[in-house]
Image (cartoon, rainbow, N blue to C red; front, top):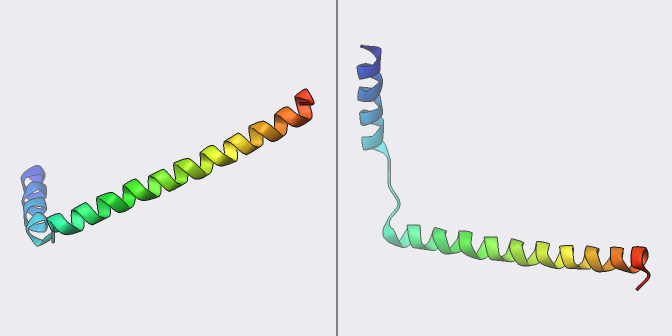
Length: 61
């Protein structure tokens, strides 16, 4: 019986949720994509710089 009570509570709570609009959802999605790309570029540049620096010291290039 506790399970039915739990799902009843879940149903009530879900009715109180304020879901984002399509416009808000699209904006947030683009924000996540842009932020992910910026981090990917940043870490790629840091990685490239560290590899180049280590090659310079280890390989003597």
